[in-house]
Image (cartoon, rainbow, N blue to C red; front, side, top):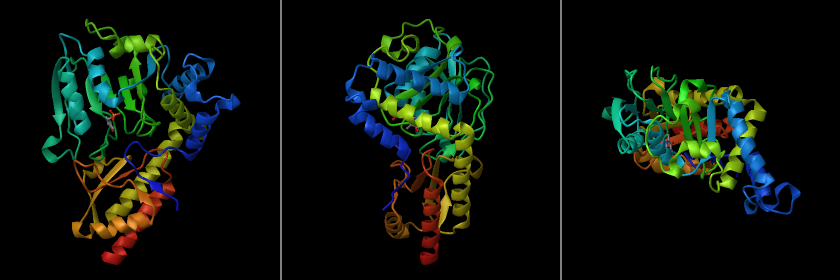
Length: 356
Ligand SMILES: *Cc1c(COP(=O)(O)O)cnc(C)c1O
């Protein structure tokens, strides 16, 4: 039976990427060696790293003269601290928007580094909306989370600010066309939308670095990793290879314009069906619903076991909501085919016919 993978992360990857990745593990380019048993400084992997970085420039439209592209470890969670360490000055302060669990974690870590002002929060209503903010022009930067993976909200347009922008794009990186030049720093754990777990994409504006007057530990210093082209120490070779394959898949099929249209179709199909179906309700403000993580609840929780059984029967996997909020969450990342959304919608409709 075909499985429809709605997992929130680690998440679905294109079939073609999985096939190429498994071949590379056994015998990379017919060399009789696996990609994961050769030196990361050898020609095979150096080429992979170059291509993986190049693809980010190509997809984002950013210039290598202005921006550094790095593949680091430690997840987006490491970036909560590392971003502040590299960009938050000793005398200045950073502005943060609190729109969910990940945003709160970013705030917590930045506070270890320096002064933080929370300029907007939706904590008062369980993070079901995105707060209006007044971003101060004198902050070192404004940090926000473009897509709130757990709660299911997403910025449809990025906040405007007179200070530099920093964004955690972990769960909607390269899911739609966007103006990357607005940002001084973008980071994204690969495992939601652009690859497997094990590496984090970091894009930083060169002119933003070196301003903090702080002695930064080597492994946490963007300048170190940038100057060594993400090869200061042994990089996670397999994770970077699979990310490279995923970005190649994206590029070859038509890039962000292409995926943006497909993701919009998936989003529209799902929410239109949700709004028509009397058995379910969405959990967040309609105007900020996420195209990546659609969160919803049953009107009658008592029917949960029936709905779950129907999901299983249809081969739908990974629909369980985050453990902190419950309910359901349909994650519709780049690699999820539109067909899978149609299957889910059909099951929801059949459920309504049967139990409505
Ligand atoms: C998953 C996620 C994180 C945490 O990522 P890790 O790689 O597990 O550290 C941070 N921010 C957002 C928006 C996420 O979706």
